[in-house]
Image 1 (tube, rainbow, N blue to C red):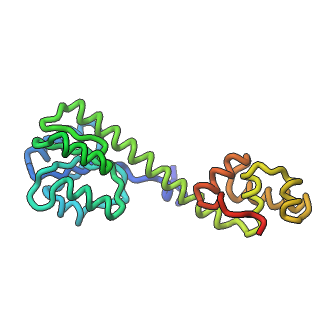
Image 2 (spheres, rainbow, N blue to C red):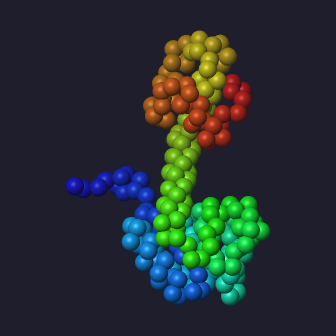
Image 3 (cartoon, helix red, strand yellow):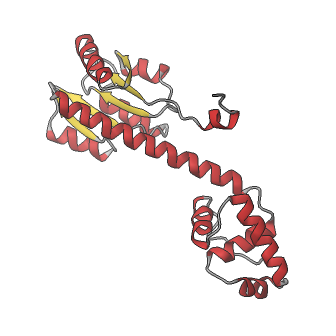
Length: 219
């Protein structure tokens, strides 16, 4: 079956589990275990290598050692936060302690496991992190799509959409904007067609995602 260009554009890349650790034996064993669970894996022997080679746009998660030569795991986490990379992180360290774990989680890490981690616990943590990454990517994609769709609305259509989102009836919208009822119906029909949404609640959610819900209508 032929895949359309639209379908190809919508196809999300497969999630990738990154393992960052200076212990080559652990890289091999952890990568094997995670691949057996059905995930694609890439390994990095240093934080610097990860920063220079990883694709931050690809969903998945990061399995991260804390104590490494050069940049530590916590330092890498801080660098990722600074550049806006929200990939879920699972810390895996033989030297972990409670303050370190609390600091990592406070900065957004999903989990902190102590080596040697139980294989079932590790795989469960990876699955949970990947699911979160995929959900975040889907939400971001939907927000981007809504943003593009709202840009197709004319100024008057946007005003009508904002008043629809507030729960106003067509007659009330006509009075508020000083236009005829048939004109309101026409603009509302255009909004429904362009956004692919019918209900006032759905339109309100779309405008909220696009940052347009709070704008004053009828100016």
